[in-house]
Length: 242
Image (tube, rainbow, N blue to C red; front, side):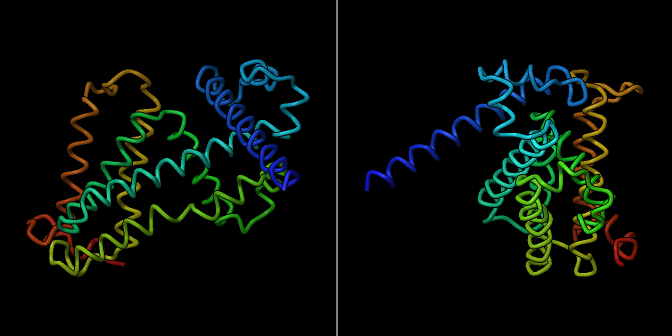
């Protein structure tokens, strides 16, 4: 019994120390960026030696993937919260709320949004990880990369499911392809997120467009393209089919 308790305590201590390291890495990456971050600076921020750091994370890339995993977990949790808040509403309302959830998530979590963009860019360039020649050795060996693969499609699946619910309740056009439209929604968000990342704390684009207005427009456009009661959706219904 004592042996089991001791093992449990060791596991708990390791998890706590690992989380402490990830949080320290987040602070350093936010401050200087991934490329300029040094492992010794992360170790110092975490209050440990560089040797101890490497015993937990063998590379800076593995640490970045750990943060990416935390980011995707947080996004998925935000999606579930949104779904729960909108479960009594029409499908169209829930889908638009999910899009807004992701946009707000990116506004409030600069580093997380950046890691997710980097990760999904890697997914595309490697054919969802099937092309191993385009993966670094650090990525291949990362436990967090394996964990990310397990949950990477969840946001898409949740959105597509709500689109199907909207089609069932009549609030979303039956001609709309759930997966295609989900990807279209993500393209809205990615463009918006890149503008956010480029501008930092500045709320306006180079053309003096308030990003809050752009966000509102994107949400209205998403609703119009899917809604069975929208004139725009009737005109463009065929354009959102495969």
